[in-house]
Amino acid sequence: MNLNELTIQEAHDKLQSGDIFATELSQVCLRRIEQVDPQINAFLRVTGEQALAAAEKVDEKIRRGKKLGPLEGIPVALKDNLSAKGVITSSASRTLQNYVPPYDATVVQKLKKAGAIMLGKTNMDEFAMGSSTENSAFQITHNPWNLGCVPGGSSGGSAAAVASDECIYALGSDTGGSVRQPAALCGVVGLKPTYGRVSRYGLHAMASSLDQIGPFAKTVEDCAYVLNIISGHDSRDSTSGTNAMPDYTETLTRGLHNLKIGVPQEYAGEGMEEGVAEQINNAVEQLKELGAKVRKVSLPHTKYALAVYYILMPAEVSANLARFDGIRYGYAAKEAKNLEEHYFNSRAESFGSEVRRRIMLGAYVLSAGYYDAYYKKAQQVRTLVINDFKQVFRKVDALVTPVSPTPAFKIGEKASDPLSMYLSDVFTVPVNIAGVPAISIPCGFSHNLPVGLQIIGPWWGEEQVLQVAYQYEQATDWHKKKPNI
Image 1 (tube, rainbow, N blue to C red):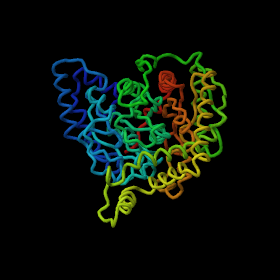
Image 2: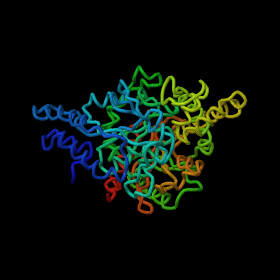
Image 3: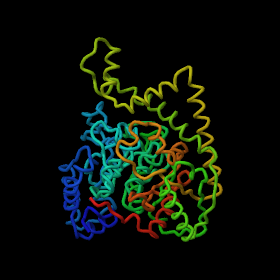
Image 4: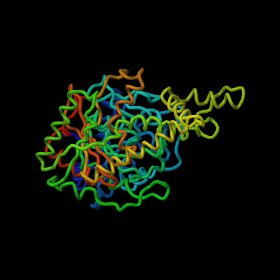
C-alpha cells in the first residue's frame, strides 16, 4: 500500500512507531497531487513549502520518541471557504481571488494545534452554492471514479482529494448536504455534525442558520478522530453549543443489538434511481443482520423541506453577501460613472450566475411585499420539519436514508437546469433545516459509481450516528474500494 492510501489511524501508528516520518508522508501526498490533480482539479492551491516545514517539526518529536496526537503529522486538505492565515482563501470566487486572511478559522487553529499538516485549499462551488462543483470561478472538479462525472458539491474538491488519495482527510462545509452528497458521489465518508457542534468562526458564511463544518475521511473511525479535535464550544461563534464533548472513538465498537433504526417512508419517493434504491435496501438488510431493530417511520413534512430550504437559504445568502460591494469587501470594478454603477459593476463582474441567482431570489423573498408570503411562511414550515424529527427520535435511535437520488451525473448534465440540480439535495436538506447530525458512508455501486447511505441522529447524537456507521462499515468492504486513477 502506498503511504498516501493510509487512513489516519494507520498513518498515526506508522509515525508513532518511527516506521515513517511526517515529511515522507507529506511528500508522498504532494507527489500524488502532482500526478493526478491535473486530471481531477481538486486543489485550487497547494501549500507544499508550509506543509513540509510543519512536518519537519513533527519529525523532531518522532526522533526524540515523543508521543504524538492522533492527527499529528497527518496531511489534510481544506475547503477554500475556511480561513487560513497567510493563504489565499477565495471561496472559489473572483470577488475574493486575492484575499489573504490575517487569522485562522477556529477549526484550522485547532488542527494546527493538533499538529495537522495543511496541504492546500480545495475547489468548491462559488461561496458553497451548488451541488456539483461546476460553479467554481476557476475550474471544474472531476469525479475520480469517472472523470466525465461531477464529484458532487459544493465540497467536491475535498471529497475528490480524499477519494483519489491526494490527502489523508479533508474538511468541507455542509449547508444543504455539501459534505454528505459529494462524499456519497466520491465513495468516501462525510460527516455533518449537529448545528453548533463545530465552530463556524472563520468560515465564509453562506446561510448562517444552516452552515456547518464537517470532515471527509476514508473510514468512520477517522471521522471520529477529526471530530474529537474540531468540535467544542467557541466564544467567538454565538451559535456554538456548550454541550458536553464525548470521545467519539469510544462508542464505535458498541454493537447494534436493541438499537432502533427508522426508515422514513418519505425518502423512497419518485425520482430515485433503481440502482441506488437497491443498494439502500441491501444496507437496511445488513443492519438487521447486525442486530438493529428496523422499523418504518414517517416524517410527514419532508415534502416541504426542499422548498423551505430554497427560500431560507437564498434569503440568508442575500444578507451575507451584501458586504461584497467593492468598497467594504471584495472585487472593485475599474470603471464606473458613479457610486451606484460602482456597486452594480463590482458585483456583476465578480459573482457567477448561480450566486447572482440566489442573491436575487433572497432579496425577493425578503422584500416588504413578499416577506410574509415566503420568508415568514418558510420559517413556520421549518418548525414543522423540526417537530417531525423530534417526534420520530422519541421512537427510534437513528434514521437511515439515501444521500442522493442518483449516483454522480455527467459534467454539464444539469448545468442549464437549476431546479434539476437542486433536487440532488432532496434527501440531505431536511437534516440542515433541523440542525441534526448525519453521515454518508459508502454502501455499494450503481453503474460503477459509488452510492452513499445516510445515517441521521438526534441533536448532539453524533455518537449514535458514528456507532451505526462504524458497525455497518466493519461488516462490509465498500469503503476499501479505490478508483482506478
